[in-house]
Length: 171
Image 1 (cartoon, rainbow, N blue to C red):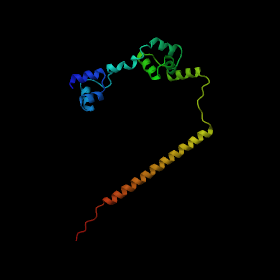
Image 2: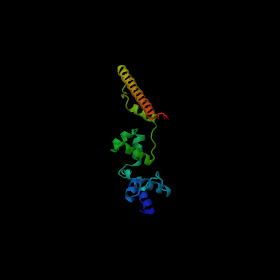
Image 3: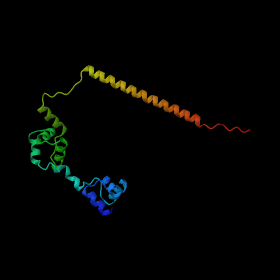
Image 4: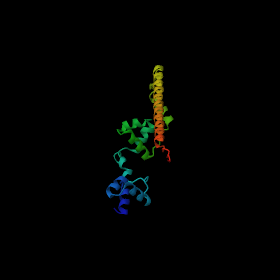
């Protein structure tokens, strides 16, 4: 495969692994040559740039912004309203440059919409039992570390005694 073909295929969207398989060159060789030729790994490649967003062309930027900001929906709720996954909502909002709420504002708005929401709080007995389990687990881990260290020390001592050269006795 020639220099030009490698560059053209990489710009078309081929990964280093695919180029390696197609050219018969090792992965590292393909990567280093392309980097030497100025094709950097973090450059967005044209074929992958819009592929994930092509199936969501029907989603209007203004409608997405309106649902999120004007109607006060969360990203998960926007996804349910538009019947798309949450990850796609994030990706599309990034693509369109729609800003997101910060964490404090998002939590405040969530609790305003769901006033009856309660976090799970363990009872005192559950918390004590969990703490005891944690103490027991840490004690067992410490015991295993101590035993491994002792075994390693015995092994070193055995190796030292076996490796000692016997004194040469001259007659």
